[in-house]
Image 1 (tube, rainbow, N blue to C red):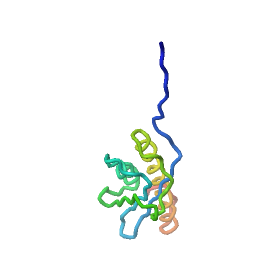
Image 2: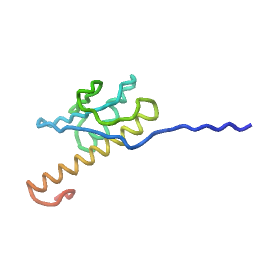
Image 3: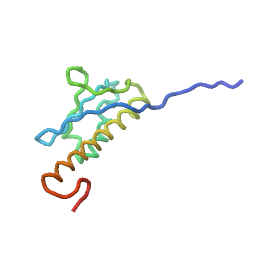
Length: 115
């Protein structure tokens, strides 16, 4: 007898939201719940790394819908880390691109280049 079943090991298509504050801190808005594994904050470290911001300069806001949370996956094992790390990465890449565009307008040059 052969038994077959399926397992969904991660989904995509979720949103991220971050705010870069004037004091250099980055505030990640997260719709994730905390299952006790700290994934609610760990997934955003990917975004902090892209922006070059150390974790101690990041604030994670979660748990209250008045904070304008983005669309997130359900909080559960293989879903949370896979989906929300990807969302944090994509959000930070977009923010970095926008920061480069602002810097290019202000200081000259082309976004995405170093000189």
